[in-house]
Length: 90
Image 1 (cartoon, one colour):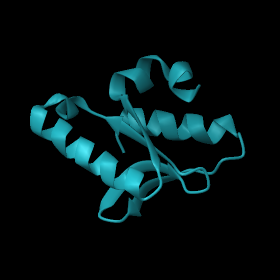
Image 2: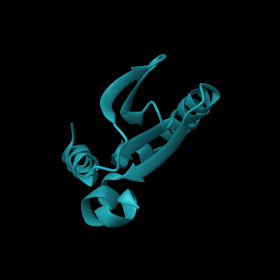
Image 3: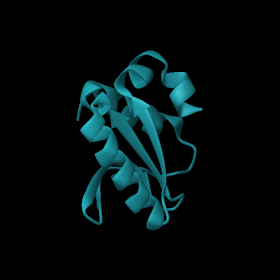
Image 4: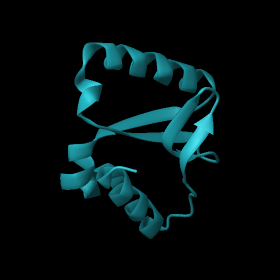
């Protein structure tokens, strides 16, 4: 896990809102950063390479596929997690 993923993992665990998250979980052809199966929620933490055009297209396809499987996908940048964790959690 990246530093941002580690920080978010700890924050999600410490939040203790009754929703269990799994990290680095396989769903179909994808490995997602965090997922709450019960809530149908996937959280992705994106590094700088996600700003590249091809990666954005790949991410959009991935997100469509995951949404077709019934999940809602939320994406946050490393910087959002590192410097604005409270907003990410809310």
